[in-house]
Image 1 (cartoon, rainbow, N blue to C red):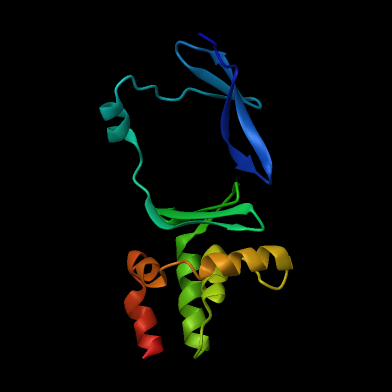
Image 2 (image 1 turned 180 degrees about the vertical axis):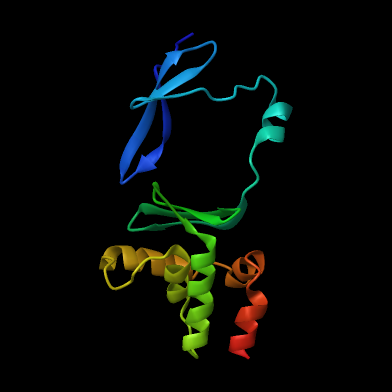
Length: 162
């Protein structure tokens, strides 16, 4: 049996983050100067019981020029978590909701890409044209009615669209 010395945790600013395993039993991981002591479950049922509940809003994967584009958006409590091509971000849910509703209040015709920018908190004026093109492709594949209903703003949106 091979014992691994690193565990992949995620990506931050396009850099992959790994934890170094400093002890097997009990499991202790070191990230920079911080030591983590994760819960270890030997039974899948115990693991499932302890997984925090998040609500998935968007999970879209497609390809452009043979390169994968993946957008995953979840929310839990007061935050929206965004994973775009391995880049992980988060923002306050209240800000995202306000941005979307204001978008509908200010305009008669709202584009899907504008909704996505409002949800993610991206400024379309400063994003590169390549990323803008990718997000536009993704925004066409999103069921926005489902997203609005999950965020409880579907009635607010209907008020401004009718």
